[in-house]
Length: 245
Length: 269
Image (cartoon, each protein chain N blue to C red):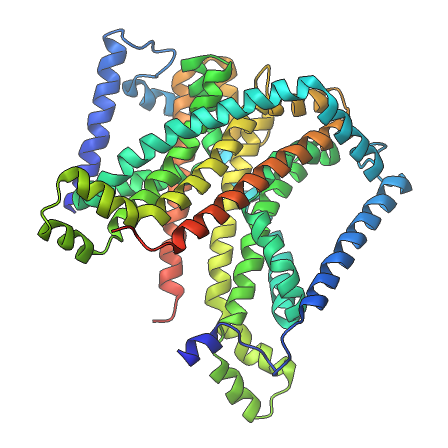
């Protein structure tokens, strides 16, 4: 409680300082929008339809990318578990891809798909599918062997072992992968929207900048930070709530 | 112990461990299959001409790229932006991360804001950087610094929190001075965290710089990629991206190898 209050006081102090330096004329309001202008900037964004629809567009793309990542990534991760040779052969590659700056490939996707939702969703999908594959494989590898042995002593078939034991035991781990996937997809899609002036929330930042509406630009950036923050914390909450205690 | 070892390698049926040869064979077959599929798509005319150029054309473009003196000018600009931005972001990140880890109230107060900003895509801050520093090199440096700052601050704070209090107490009982405490106790204990934060921060500085260059710039590898794209020189675009990837993945694996070697070393005391 004390920390949360201190944090709010800190934010208020930063806002006051920014307001003061802009009003004193030390920094131009064309570089930093005075915080007192943000409320009207948000209102303007709202009236011009720059909040609800772009938000829905961005979130929709993020879910589409995550859904595609789940459809591809979960079976792939499962395969890498069932075939240890494939798992051992590809795991380092996928790990390297996780650290690689895949978003930099976007000009290629622009060439392939044009300035369409296919490009933004594909960039989100690429960022999302890797954690799904890695976490799914990890989840299956982490299924307690005792559970599988019990199933075997009941003479379950392979299919039944997977369906009744391995998969249910792996679900929490797979969910971790999906949580990361959704966050990565969201962030990469917003970045793409900004870069190619297309789609939802990211496009608004670019548009406000080119229109030179500085308070509107700050408002859109704050909105994006708030959306990423909400997703991060809400998903972490859902995950701890879902996990068996 | 035996149980933890087992839980990390659950299998449906007992099966022999995959041999090294089979793993290598799988990799070689995969690379050949992908290359073949690529060539087939490139030659089939299924996709719009030149969108997927044949590997030979990309290789030629790559050689031309490496032979052109202009490439090294752009590479130099990008390297300068990345290194300067990373250095600034790293120093600021450590300076912010240490009190975040050491002072509980401060850490708890700023933690949620740092986490939230760390998650948001940094590229959306580019317009602010361009308003403040213009559309030249300085705004790319600012974006690289901002990108590097958050992972460094977060990992440094975690590193400070994980320091074994016994080490600190030992240092105090030897009556070490503040400087000795920092160099003999805190720094060696935080070495793995610092190396990790450098690797993460550097990777994000590279992304921040290149995306900034692609969006709006007049020099750098990102500018070069964007220029090829706008003029539809697709094989050249592929060549630039291949170069960027080789450099990015290369530095990353070099840094993680460095971290592993350093991390194993016993702390100097």
